[in-house]
Length: 390
Image 1: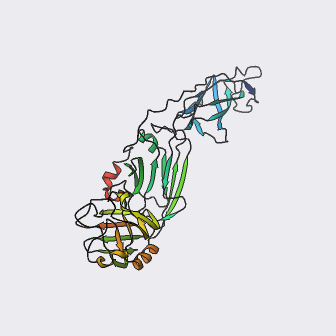
Image 2: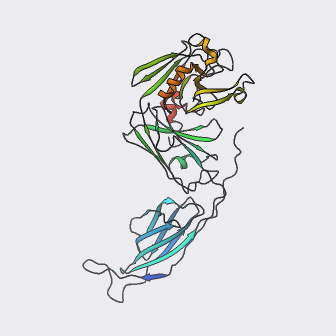
Image 3: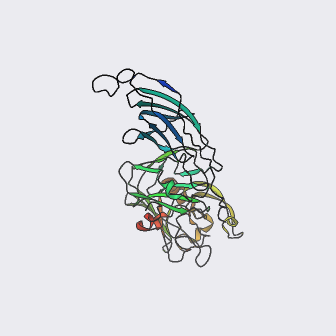
């Protein structure tokens, strides 16, 4: 069932246009100074602070003079950096004002005669009626395989996708080419993934700066920024041939080992998926219940060395009950099963983010982008077209 969409929050605009109480500072003097003779400094510049609604920049203007400096600080000491326009009569913050935040503004203005005046004021923005939050993957500081995308799942719908995507900045240690793509997560929520054009190069360091505080997603506001980063590990690829009933681990282009397996039973709902799936998690020993994936009461058991490949329930794992079929027939309920000894060794060798390239003639279809990490099943041109900034 898709998420219920509610109207965008109506945040009250907070407009503050004031002539501020001033405290004088010494006038500039010396060769080349524009200061007027004593008694002719002229009136101080009229400073106006415009505190627009959350999601808009803070602006400061000076009539009858120029702005020497502007400092906008929130209650936690964080600053909204900004810049003055040509002529020095207007200053605008680079970042947007965040909802439910109090700001202090200190302005040093200079009159037409060169006299400097300091003014201070404060304002607050209205609190957000709805807040949007997100979940990042992979985890901060982790080392992952060459197929792992940078993935963001949002708690609330994102209808202003371009506004959100503009606030996301990916930096890599080697200038990796990549693109954001908007998709629907298996949970039904909005999601955006950043994947490289090809598999990552081992050793690549990836950083995300999500400067979202004060950004309206269309059905909720972000009230904080996010930072994360990860490192790409060894170049490992797992190749699964369901027709040949074998699994091959390739590391650095060299085959490390090949083991017999049994995939999903042909001809129905118990078939496996094909295409490239990325190892999402090493879950170890877990309880698998067929009713949770729509297969009735076919099984309910503890399964060892479980490696999750999709949200819909496809795993690679130990399956000793299917020993007679390894390398001979596909007789599982959709997973890729192998002996306990092979599963133990394989489990120790692979890493989260390793791509599983699965092929076979009788499958349920290709792994979808949001069913785990299926972005590799989309051509590069089609993936770039999923960006809201294309």
